[in-house]
Length: 166
Image (tube, rainbow, N blue to C red; front, side, top):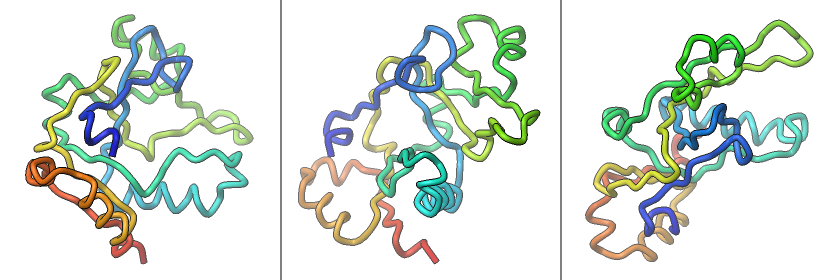
């Protein structure tokens, strides 16, 4: 609710996330809803094996790819970090996601996320370009009850996840 009411997503940095370089970036996945669900279910099913950390949740905000592109968002570059730094100019290092399949005991592969990033400390968005993801009907009702009628009319849509899980 806070994100929707503020219409703002905060960028991650090297300290708060996996961003390379000195520029904060807001991270997105260019994945179909089924791909997002696979990430959520995989993490829930293997939470202990994955270190107990939660990265994915049944709540989210989706935007059209063209909207993110128009705001300056771009796909990341999956590559060994040091190699990528030689390819991209320094002011584009925020686009680098480390990738390494050489060590079978420590694979570094985030390609399933199909990540895009927007270079920004904060991303201020229009509700008319936002689709809200909620886990179930109860959460959808709570969302509707806690947003103004004006905000609800502006939203591009609401997707309830539970009917999509099989």
